Every structure is written in C-alpha cells, then in structure tokens.
Image 1 (cartoon, rainbow, N blue to C red):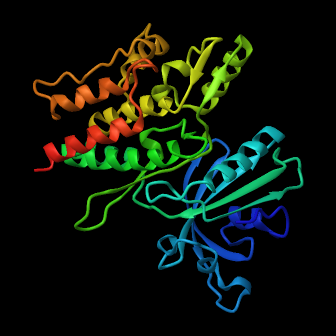
Image 2: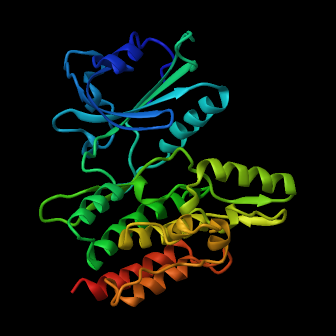
Amino acid sequence: MGCSISGLNNLYDAVNGGGDIWINENRFRIVKQIGEGGSDSLYLVKEIRNEAAVGGGLSKKIQDPSHVSADGSYSIKKVLIENEEQLETVREEIRVSSLFSHPNLLPLLDHAIISVKVTTDKTWNHEAYLLFPAHLEGTVVDHSKAMKTKNERFSTKEVLQIFRQLCAGLKYMHSLDPPYAHNAIKPGNVLLTNKKGQSPLAILMDFESARPARKEIQSQSEALKLQEWAAKHCPELFRAPELWDCTSRSSIDERTDIWSLGCTLYALMYGESPFEYVLEEPEGNLQFAIENAQIKWPAEPKSAYPEPLHQFIKWMLQPPTLRPRIDDIIIHVDKLITKYST
C-alpha cells in the first residue's frame, strides 16, 4: 500500500467532527470511536463503496479476500505525531506490518501519513491513519473482564487453543530472515473473535514495537540504549529480564518474546501478569521479582488449571540461555492440547 503524504483534504476535521475521510482513493465514514491511548485513537469506520471510483474500491487493493469486510466495516488507528522520532516510529510500524501475512497476525490494509499545519490549539505536525479489519469483540483483557463479572474463566481447552494460535503467529515472525520479535506481547494486544461452533480466533496486533530480534550488545552505551528503548516500548509486567538489565557483553534474541508469551499464558488463566502482585506491595520491586522469576500463584484450595500448565509457564520464564524457542513451545502445547481436549 502506498503512503500518501498529501491529498487527504479535511481528514482531521472529518475524524473529529464525525464525517467522511479518505485514505488514498478510498472513502470511509466514521461510525464511532472505539479506543484511545496516548497519542492514538481507534475508530470504527464503514467504507463508502463506489464501484465506479478509480481502483474499484478497497476490495481491489486487498490481496487476501478474507480480509475484505462483507459490510464494509473496518477500524482506523489515528496517530498524532509531534516530532521526527514519532514520525519514524510510525513509518517503521507501517514497514514492519507490511512484512507479515498470517491468519493470527492483524494485517495492515492501507495507510496514510499527512502533514498538518501547526496552530495554537495543537502541537503535532503530522497525522497517520492505519486501516485494519474490525474486530469488535475486543481483546483478551475485554473478555477476561466480562467473564470475571460472571465469575467465569477460560477453560483449560480454550486457554490452550488461544495460546496455540499466538504461537503460530509468533512462529511466523520468528521464522523471518532476519527474525522479528514482537516486543509487546500482552493480553491487551490479543484480539479474540468468537464464531459459532468454532474455537475462539486469536489475533496478535500492535506491531509498533516489533523489530529485528537479534542484537549483539558490545558496550555499556549500547546496553543502556536498549534498556531505555525497552522501557518505552515493552510493557513492564510482560518484559523479559534481559531487557531490564542488559549487560555490556550480551546477545539478545527472539526469546524475549517467549518470556512475554509465558506471562500471557498466566494471564489467560488468571487474568493478570504473574508479577502483578508486586505492584500492590508497599516495598515491592518489580524488576527484582522479574529477574528472579518470583511467580505468585493464586491462593486457591485447588487450582482451576492442571499442574502441567504451571510447569509450562515456569519453563518459559527462565534465563535467556535456558529459555525454549518457539518451535519447542509449539511441540509442547500440541501435546497439552491432545491431553486436555478429550
């Protein structure tokens, strides 16, 4: 998809006033805002189709027909960009997203970046618009909250089915040349869609932090630079210990994602990170708890989940050199699915 730098007249006014917007040659109508965080806003939109238009509409541009919405509904992520660093971050997100094509990774369908005249009522000088399929049932976090109000939780079978799909998407990323790490795996970045008679469809999203996974750190300044980057881009409750305290002579690879994957499996089961308890302790030290893998299991008379799942999590939350790779994880989760799906 091409990135338009100009030619999207009145785009800002449309988004804020609830009108029509154009991304390249395709027109969309804002339905409602469905999310917000920092400089990002997420909108549900509906394509205004005109078969006579140049290019024949969005469906003609989308390579995978399964990504074409039957009713024209999509989501648009709007990003306000204040400086060159933020602009480069969005461009990198667009570049990286275009590398991925997998059923368990959210596809970027189209995008546009426009220049905006700075005025007294705003500080940003660019706006980016990223178009994705709409998944209105929300993330794992949304589902977990809804179930908690009804005193429900995912079954062992559902946990393993969701987790297996995350592994499939991650294997795709880790198998690229060079391998890419997601760097922000967490329940809030996992979309869940339920279809009648089928297991939930899990889709990993948000590739703003995705980068080539393998890094050779050869100095203290490089180590500090990586730690500072991780502090901005990798969720602390799911961040691997080597990204908290990077030594001046170290190798970083895609197994940082395996740590986050283990934390996410715990969250699928119990609704939070295995280290969330530290935030409630008066003198709790999150970094220390993570670096020493001090997992706190729920105080229940009998666990809702079998002990092999606990052992599976512990296996992923090991030091980098002992931590398994995604192929090992998939072999093991497939065995667990066979064991607990009957």
